[in-house]
Image (cartoon, rainbow, N blue to C red; front, side):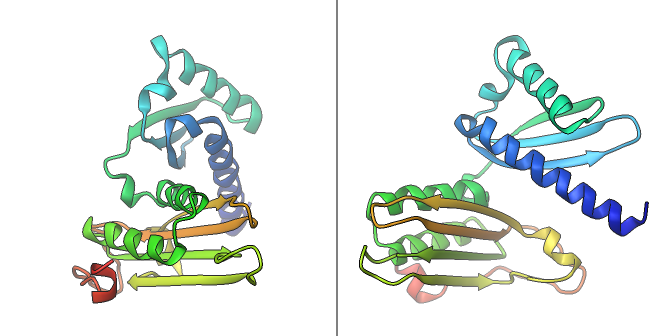
Length: 207
């Protein structure tokens, strides 16, 4: 197997596991998953808001989850590690779901975007981007895309592995709205540049 094909297959497996975990651990506040294959086992690290919901009493829940992962994806000897999220505002999946919730509560999308970016940058993120797509204004409005990016957010090349990304969908009365959030966490070291602390623009800091 060529290295390119192996990389693609591993990426597909990670995506499928991430989708499965998102459905299974929604009540635990699922944020993201990391998959590392070794000759002996497959280590799956799950980042959540509520680790206790993943582990369960006497480890029952995590044992059942491990068995499902093994059977569903034909993975021999999976090992699931559960990590509690330190700061939800640095986790794109959590942030995207929060934005979706606020949109469904009829809060202005542009205000949500500005306030959320402010909160992310105050946590020390080196870059953040939020994209909101759909009938943002009202039922009779045309579909449009609101995008705001601050700091360094690479879009191509090997360095995109340093960018965390999350998606969610809001379902207000006038139609589905997609939300995409991308964050470069604090302390990220890029091989091609040195990113210092990002200054928050005035229009964002005043949000």
